[in-house]
Amino acid sequence: MFLDRQIDPVKTRLIHADLRRLVKGQEIEVSVRLELEGEPVGVEGDGGILEQLLREVEIRCRPSIIPDFIRVDVSHLGAHDVLHVSDIKVDEGITIITDPEAAVATVATVREEQVEERAPEGEVSEPEVIGKGKKEDEE
Image (spheres, rainbow, N blue to C red):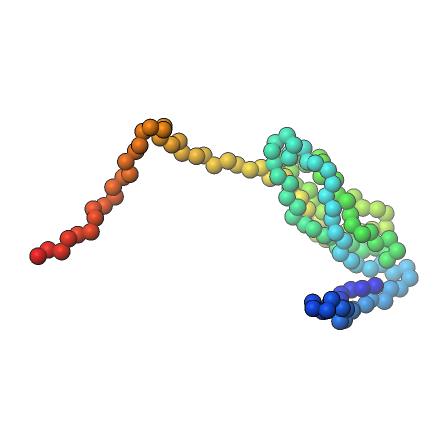
């Protein structure tokens, strides 16, 4: 199994590869990508924005059942809700070893800034004078 590899940036050839020997029946630890699925309730109804805070998790499992990615349903998230690693459901034989309290995704709301009202068209307001101009040299 590939652990790491170096590729020549110019020739795009493999320079070096780190391999890991697998032992039948032994579990290994690997990183797996998280894929968010669904449209959160907080985005549709409350005008929030879905933010993905964690892109992958560490898992422990047998090499034969390593998933390419883990799908995470976020359709139940409302505004200001947070999805934690402990909320992720995985297949039997797979154990997530990433901190269970780590945040995976959240729905944030956007606040609009208050804009000052402008003078109505036709009325021109004079700028406020803060200080006098340059002092003239005394002769």
